Length: 157
Image (tube, rainbow, N blue to C red; front, side):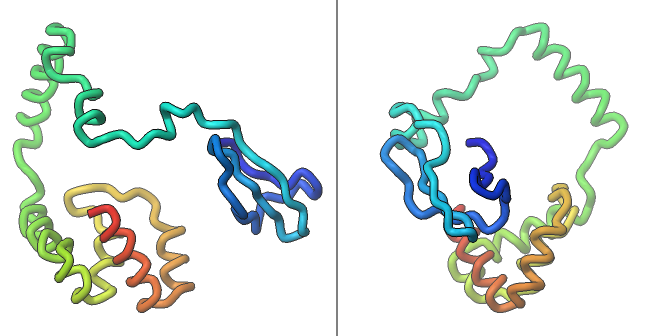
């Protein structure tokens, strides 16, 4: 969907979704008071919920990949592993710690700083620029930000 900009005042801040219409279009409102419909209708097949198995079946399998490409990948993998043969030694302990945190019990009991640290850590993965996350966290405060982060992680789990 394209960026929503108020057609009356050409501003893109403080736009709220008032309603989602059949077909996927939305009714938006801007702080100036103007309301309008936005977006293109979404085809019915895209709106229909897909099962996990149907999503899994849509991914290519090794046998779907050109054999020459698989050979090239194997050569590149061997070359990479010759230079960097193993994980950062901190990764296993870090992932083990967060396996415990990302359980229903661990998620509710963990210190808010543990969640913020996870979002910002480069151990085992690269989260990218977290400036927006950190600004929102600081604006909300530890308790509210942790609760919001917990509910997001709970939803994803």
